[in-house]
Amino acid sequence: MRRRHPVGTGNRDMTARHKERHRIGHIGWLRAAVLGANDGIVSTASLILGVAAANATHGGIMVAGIAGLVAGAMSMAAGEYVSVCSQADSEKAALDLERRELETDRTGEHRELTAIYISRGLDPALARQVAEQLMAHDALGAHARDELGISDTVAARPVQAAFVSAITFAAGAVIPVLVALVSPADRTSSTVAAATIVALAILGGLGASAGGAGILRGAVRVTFWGALATGVTAAVGALFGVSMG
Image (tube, rainbow, N blue to C red):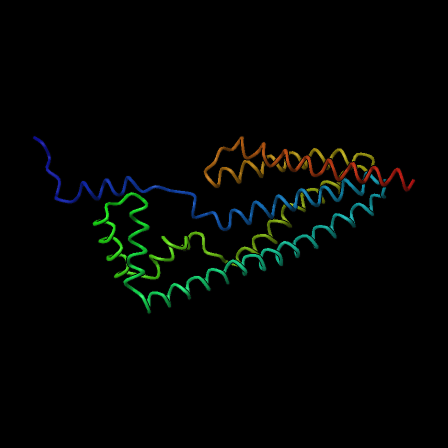
């Protein structure tokens, strides 16, 4: 005998099974985290390798590494805060303008939103209906999302971005500093360089995985550019070390 399910149960089951876990909601903190950690590893390792290549003492290398860690973390926090604040100010100005336009010309704004939905493939009659219903529910939110491209997912958050950048920079920078600390004085450069490559590969893979992208591609991309930066800096340090010697 075939079992009958209550009306609506199947739809609820399908909805429950269809819950998708997209990674786009991570984009704000993920960008700042990967950027901060990558900069911490690359810039601090490059500084250590450059100073080491210039024939500095082990103490001098450590001072340079720690100074780079502290200065870099503060610089990243300040730079990210100012940058994201500028984005937040631009978003606020755009929303204020949109709010005034909704107050003075709601009909024109309805036509504008309708035109957007038509351009995305909706039938004109359906587009007008969708625009009308969305504006009745949240007119500013609808225009912010569909006209301006502003939503909670990608909205600017200056304090969060600054904090994440500073913490992740320090977390990345501490790796080459600790490796330099425990390395023999005559093998500092090679040990830090090897640790940097490994750390960059892991970071690239983790960042790609958190964002839902290919792990290998992310690891290769981050490792290549990080290795290039540290290699150039070491070459410059060696050049100046020879010329000063």
